[in-house]
Length: 139
Image: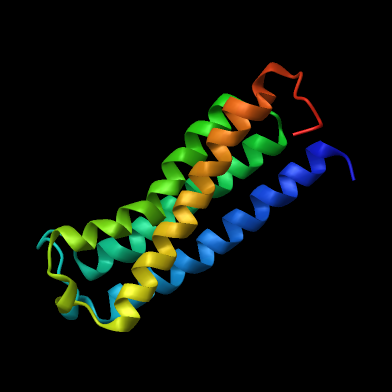
């Protein structure tokens, strides 16, 4: 398999993992909104609406990456990574004991998945330097 297809496949795997992680966490947050410590401006409808917007940005990022529109792809993918990373913000609104083990698991899983997508963007742009069109296939 050539490196371009291998990288697209790796990105797809990270995006699927992030999509599943965020879907699970956002669904739990939606269903049990009263149990999650979070700001008052977060409402049940805003949770699923945010997930739809974030996920659409991630899908657009993947499509742009496949089209080799790297800078736009990086922007979309970095924004999408925040879908998982911002879940860690729950900890700004409550003590660790305010969260169930399930909530901790979902929040951390979401954060790690978002970090994987952001890591891919950073690696792709800083190490592979795909945007130059001269990426070294040995990386």
